[in-house]
Length: 418
Ligand code: ATP
Ligand code: MG
Image (cartoon, rainbow, N blue to C red; front, side, top):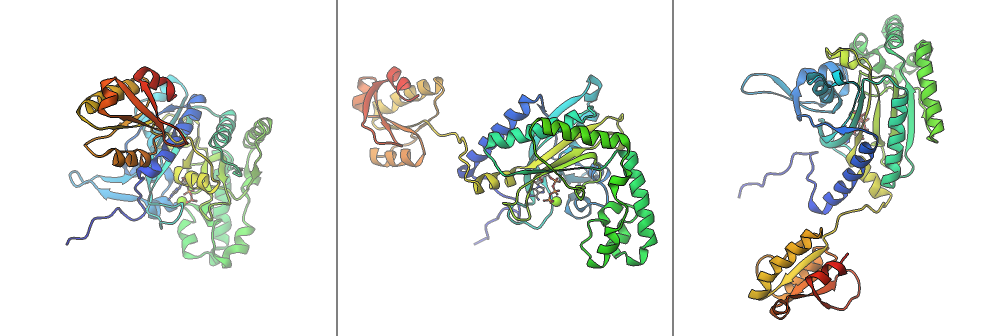
């Protein structure tokens, strides 16, 4: 027998038993984003490879080894499954001139693809919610995004998430720091390993992340970014902090927080938990004022974040948070010819009143239908036999608590199950 085809490693099915939690999560996130004036934007999952190379940066983990890139068989284009949402979102906003109408606050959600080693909290297809505020220079926008996220954690019922922030300075400060870093590393070139040599002129900041013990001492004494941040950059960071304090949001300043993508400047942040092992970052973001111009658009400031849905759901599970999962109201049990025709009317009447109804399909005994009703998770069984149907009545039985059966008209039924 042929071997059954299975899903691709690191790409998960989300089955009906689990999808209720996803929907509850998504509803809460959407409501919170909407309440801050963010509007939904939906982009394709596949983009020109160049879009990601030019935005995320050539010498980053994502572009160097994590992208699903393939050649379009028909025209030879190099295409990539999106590894993140910001680049596509900006491409869409620029392509349709949305910033011409003034600043835009948008959010997106959906699958992202990265070829990583699958493990708990790390997958090859995973899901993000992301939001971007475009055309707004902050720091009020940066602060508002953090206030919004903190409200989201509260609404979801999550606790214990901590906020780490840092500033990377503005584009000029970053460039000055970068130049002095390159000069410093060139002076110590005999200590650089192959990775570092390769990154020296493309992404010297990443050399600071090295795990090579032989380079630690040299790296520790390297020029510090904070010393290169100009007055405006420091002011932005201070204002952000006072806005956070005014909203009672606690944070740690983490000078080592640079984030893995090239495009950030000024504010960067991460929300982290220690309950998910090394997959502890559930949300990351910051400001990327240079990116729109870098992609060929008219310069405009921008700030945004992305959150990992799987990691947040794992955390909700770890914290045993009860989620508002939608439950079926009624399983409709019927037997007999007259009862079965009446069942259609009862279902329609209940649905018209907003109740969810699973009407039993096919024919089987009352006993086996009641078993299905129980398994369905419905709150109530509505039971119709030919006797009930003859009187245009139904029997109602609560399935999740002790109850006796009641005989009711449709009108009475819709009142009894609210
Ligand atoms: P990490 O350091 O854990 O690899 P990252 O810095 O690569 O994360 P971002 O690019 O900032 O992650 O993406 C935003 C969020 O998306 C992360 O904070 C995380 O919650 C989630 N995320 C990123 N990669 C994965 C993945 N492979 N599987 C599941 N979630 C992910
Ligand atoms: Mg990563």
